[in-house]
Amino acid sequence: MAEEYTPDEEAGAPEHGGGSPVEDGEPEEQETEQPMLAPDPDDGVRRRWYALHAYSGQEGSVKKNLLANAEQAGLTHLVTDVFVPMEEVAEIKSGEKKVSKRKFFPGYVLVRLPEHPEQNPDLWHLVKNTSGVSGFIGARTAPVPLEDSEVEAIVEEIRGERERPRPKVAFEQGERVKIIDGPFANFMGNIDTVNEERGKLKVMVEIFERLTSVEVEFWQVEKM
Image (tube, rainbow, N blue to C red; front, side, top):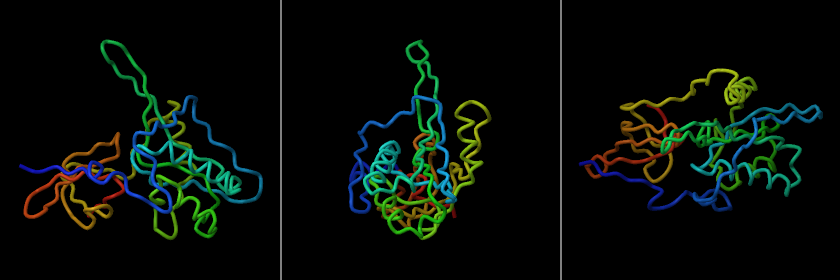
C-alpha cells in the first residue's frame, strides 16, 4: 500500500526571507463588495500587473502585509493595488442554501507595480521579503507581467459579466511532473489527485523503492 506524506504535518509552512510566514490558522481577509481595481496614479510611470506565489491559505495575509510594509517603507506610490480574487459559491447544507467565498486562484496574489520592479532594489526587497510570499511568477530575476486584459477578465467573471477563463496551467491525473521545491525537490512522479480549489496536487513518487503520495502546491512542480 502506498504511503502518504504531507509536508505541512511535519515541518509546517516553509520560511522565507527575514520574517516568518503567517500561521495557516490566521483568518483570511474577505472581500465584501464587488471587486474594483484602483486607477493608476497620473505620474507618467507605466505599471503592470504581476502575480505572486503565496503560501496556501495566506493570500489575504500577504495582501495585508504587503500594503502595510509599503506604507511603512514610504513606497505606497509604487505598490498601488493588491488584489486577491474571490468568488461567491452557493452550497446546500442541511437543506439550506449558504453562500460562501473562496479564492478564485488559490496560491496567487495579484499586485500592481511599476514595470520591471526588479530594477528598483527597495521595491524588489520589500515584495520578496513580505511574509507569506515565495516569489514572482516568471524568472527569478525578471518577473513576467500579466496583461491588463487578463486581470480585467477576472474581475468581469467574478461580477458575473463573462465566463470564467480557463487556467493557463492545468494539471491532469496521471500526468508526469517534477517537484522543484520543498523536501522532495528533484523527485519525479505521476499526479494522483488534483485539488483545484486548494491549488494542491498529490504526486506518487518512489522513495526507498516504495510509492509514496506527496502533497505539493501547484507552484512546487513543473511539467515534464
